[in-house]
Length: 276
Ligand code: B12
Image (cartoon, rainbow, N blue to C red; front, side, top):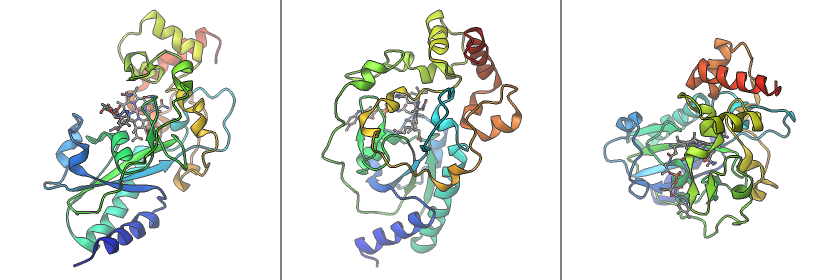
């Protein structure tokens, strides 16, 4: 029978061997209820713990006229995180047995809350997890397992409460009590339905084809955050959307999943405002 410390040590070895530096554990029961999500059926019966991992993606510099969100510059994180988490989960299964399922984004787990619960950072007014080392430019992914692991505890801290993200959010989506998704530019750039005039204006004014980073860019807690993107994100970087929307790019970048039409519409809006 392995003791608690030995289990944590083996987990640390498996996780760090795939290049993940920031991770923590919370109890599965503490992050319920689940989000409605088709992937929920993959949660193992008798799940006890969630190993939450962070994947930093911020580069040291970006072109001034960047018109896609920083998270979409790198190789699609869904693929990258699934690969690394699966490798780590396989090692743990070999070592301890039990059941494991890996998730990132397309996850029934409320990932920001899970990362907070696993002691990985504070939750900003913008609703994002802000890690003390890497700031908010991190993706979150997790391994849900039947293994009973000693959980971490949330940090006894909060965000600076400076209100910069509230003041600067392009759509005025952020308030003292959370994010109004219907006003969030990131959400608007992804919408498939017809946009209102105000929504079109927001896309034109802010010159974004995909996503929005304003609430992270203005956050003082990101100012001194470490810039060391995951090795996998240093390959196949593209700062621009290929305006012909090649199938290759749509497949390999996180902005591809909503399909060509949404991007075509946003590109037309920017062209009409002479932004591209
Ligand atoms: C749907 C979704 C969106 C939607 C809606 C976002 C929203 N704010 O609701 C849209 C398309 C707008 C979106 C945009 C973005 N998203 Co998004 N999104 C998701 C997704 C798939 C589900 C989120 C959700 O519905 N949560 C349910 C609600 C109820 O939970 P919640 O928002 O976390 O809030 C709860 C807790 O945070 C908690 N809480 C809030 N404050 C506090 C404070 C304390 C002290 C405590 C204890 C609890 C607490 O209470 C809330 C209610 O339970 C997650 C992945 C996932 N499975 O979680 C990614 C995710 C949250 N998104 C992510 C990212 C990167 C983004 C963008 C930055 C992308 C971009 N650059 O354009 C923007 C940021 C916009 C913003 N400020 O929210 C990352 C966040 C990483 C991080 N560092 O936090 C995630 C985790 C994906 C991932 N795997 O990395 N997103």
